[in-house]
Amino acid sequence: MKRIKMLAGNWKMNKLNRDLAGFFGTFFEAVGWHQDESLSDRVDVLFAVPPTLLAHAVPLAEPSGVRIAAQNIHWETAGAFTGEVSVPMIKEVGVSATLIGHSERRQYFAETDVTVAKKTKASLVHEVLPIVCVGETLEQREAGLTQDVVARQVKAALADIQDPKDLILAYEPVWAIGTGRSASAAQAQEVHAEIRGLLLALFGHSIGSGIRILYGGSATPNNIGELLSQKDIDGALVGGASLKPEDFAKMVRAAL
Ligand code: 13P
Image (cartoon, rainbow, N blue to C red; front, side, top):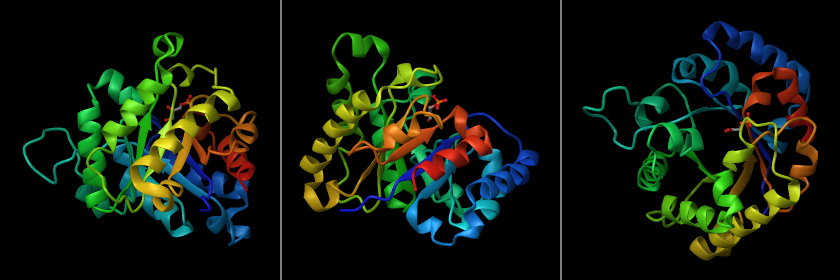
């Protein structure tokens, strides 16, 4: 099954509403997005932005076929959960995807395999595309536990899912995030192949072969070409380089 490459930017806790128009203007121009209508069929582009930017980013991006995603959601629809945002809430403002289980949330905000599974389920129930993040720490890699940790995270996240209509996984080794030290293309491909095997075992060939697996961790215009040339790397989840419209535009062009 053909998997269209996806370039997803994760802005983390960066940018203000006043930055949006300039950012998207420069980005679309640098990609040549509006000069070639076929681009939005050949590459998927998405930005996961802070909650205050969601409603303002949607009209700047979604009409051009670029998705806006939340960086986190709560699994309940509504209720007494101070400070949380539900899937229907993001959907109401036109958001069509969400990150789930980013390592920064696991590390600093007590996200667990259990909450990741609940959020993945809630996202699918409300037909918002989940991008489920997994990845090992440096200690785990050095102890030879990479495959075990990633397999546990993937299985736990998908434990309650039978027939995912649309789902994306992101392999983000924690030691590569924000460090300037990307996994090599071969290191990333090795883990992606393992995840692909798990997806085939869980969902069968027709669904498992269609689920995209993104790589994240110090992806830049310099290393994106090699990463994307790997058989099971279907795109990238990009932090730092997605804050610079020209750099991210180069990465999108590399996927074409
Ligand atoms: P960097 O690209 O800044 O390493 O961040 C990766 C990431 O965490 C994307 O979700």
